[in-house]
Image 1: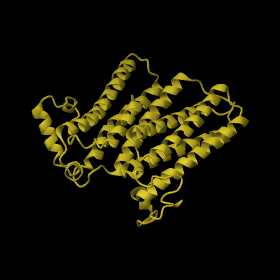
Image 2 (image 1 turned 180 degrees about the vertical axis):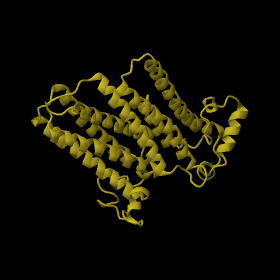
Image 3 (image 1 turned 30 degrees about the vertical axis):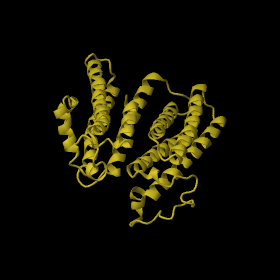
Image 4 (image 1 turned 30 degrees about the horizontal axis):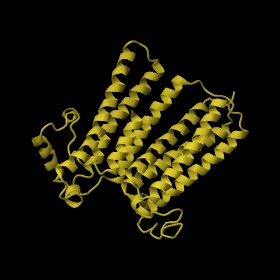
Length: 322
């Protein structure tokens, strides 16, 4: 469900739907507009914000309903995840079925989910007054927290499903740590690409506007702003991080042949490499084809799958050598 939530959120962003609901109503917001008058009222609220005035002026009610429903599903799915998580958690906790050492981490995951709702509204607010879209900083924070929740849930589940592996060296575990860090950093950089719509420019590969490093890379001052606010730099950084991540995964895969890995761990390593190659192909294709929505959504799904494989590998290596 969390995986699906990330995908729905990505499509909501790609379809410019995230600002269509201009209020945060955690309880009453569960009910969508049910009459023509209610739809007109929601449409009128949307028509007051800059995105409508500067980007979608003249939009029909039917078009508004399309983007509204994407954002509505996104918010409703978040609420549903909360119920699906909290009710069984309380039930098993009362019955004493949850070990003490697991209860607090599980409660923490729910707290992060609740915080994610507030962070999502904070993100939406950034696009309601002075911008036609949300802040790339808040968008990336929202994505990052979603993936932290996903990773924490996955890690807890893996701990319940699988026994620790044996045989990997400390160096190999450090390599898996580096890969996991690079995957996470590349996804965060992708958040800034999405937030700045940076994939809609420099649609060539491997060069950008005929150069390896685009001419406008360092045009903002202070320099660090370029990493977060400069379209050319943000796209370049994401490219470099992606290629570095794939290279690190290939190096780890080669090192895995010399490591005394049990067959299940070796299979996870193979999956990690396969998903990395797939994700790189999806990323290049998305760029060259100027970000078609189905391909861009697949690229985001690939990012979560790559994170999943990296976490699964590191989890199997958590115990170290015998």
